[in-house]
Image (tube, rainbow, N blue to C red; front, side, top):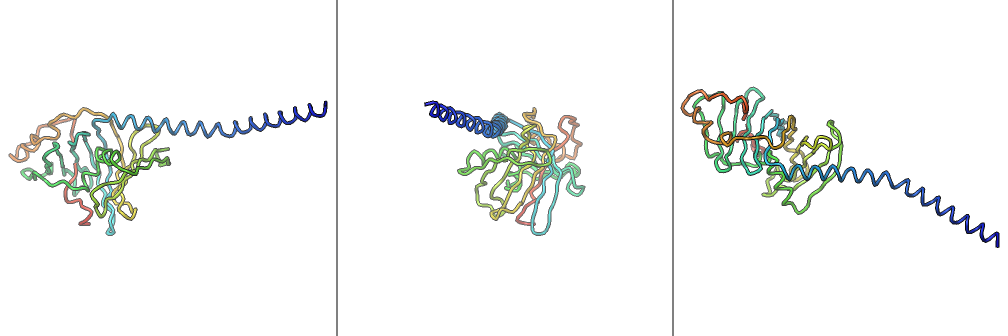
Length: 249
């Protein structure tokens, strides 16, 4: 009888020890998963609440002939208005494109009297904006979420499919910092999975105050009439041009 009791106690102790060891091994994985979900939840929330943004963005267009790089400033509303200006390189500096949601206008700040109005939208420009990415992401039947490291630290990566079957613009990925919750990079791929456009963000600001006249024709009236535009210290920049087309590179 004593032998049976000893055997029963031994089995209970072994099971208890085994159970404790299993809990110790699983706990760190549960905590890591919870941390990833928390970062993703915060990112989802801040993106869903974004109404406008202002950012510096280095845009790289990649083709079989090489890479063209443009430094730009973007002012964007989620409702469709945008203003984008090239600030480098020197031969493209001052090119501005803006849209009030209906009409797209282009001009060069450094050349008086030259304005193009009612420009046709193209995907090489429209897909640069986070407003389009979020629309594509929300409408995609297949989306992907993953975690990876960039130089800026750990990022959550959102992937979306781009409609319209453009030969060079098929899918896109958005890297968002898990620490700052700000976009770090967006990459656009062709149908073969090759990088075609890379946008690296800096000085990103959510929900900036963007006045209506930032996207309207009043800004160009001074150029058309060859009158110097009035100073605007709050919004000194504008952005991007029809000639930057992948299918012509």
